[in-house]
Length: 115
Image 1 (cartoon, one colour):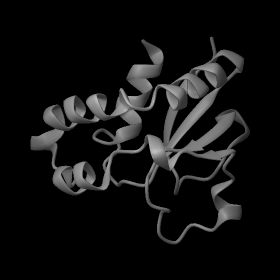
Image 2 (cartoon, one colour; image 1 turned 120 degrees about the vertical axis):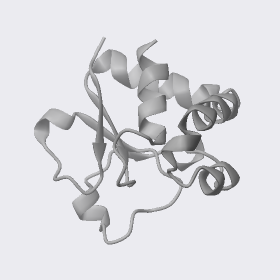
Image 3 (tube, helix red, strand yellow; image 1 turned 90 degrees about the vertical axis):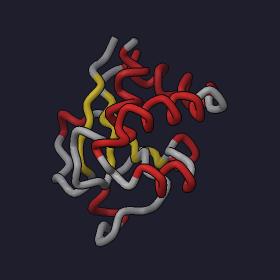
Image 4 (cartoon, helix red, strand yellow; image 1 turned 60 degrees about the vertical axis):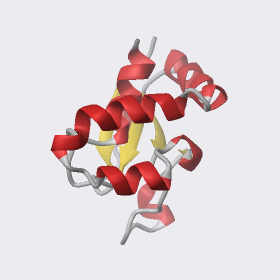
């Protein structure tokens, strides 16, 4: 099995990133398509607008956010299977735009894919 990494979209792409997947629903501000160097944008796997707004990257809501997001992901088994298939072939880097590197959807997705 390959490696799963998480990284801010604002960090420069590196060869060690492997397959680069943006997992945000919204395109990150100030990033061009070229600079993003994406292989795939999976906006449908991102938290719903409602969940994203409710969470607001508030660490106090992190535990509940994870529970709600995991529940939403049950409706995205095809997308999860696609990501798992990519991880079997090599390194996959899940990209996110949030400033908080410890409390975001990529952290949750990485845990699910690694399980």
